[in-house]
Image (cartoon, rainbow, N blue to C red):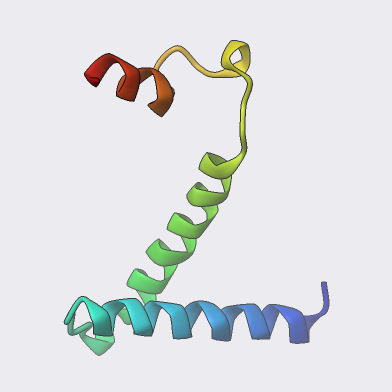
Length: 74
């Protein structure tokens, strides 16, 4: 990854953050923007982990599969 790619990713992340905060009508104080961007970056990292599909036997015991929950609720 080149520094230009990293800069482009940072710009895209900031743009996405701005769009979401505008849609949610959240006013981000200038002195908190850096921390909120760091938190948003961390949220992106966590979502990548959650999107990885694990086989049932590889899932930790604390998790559940939505299919089993929706079947139990129907």
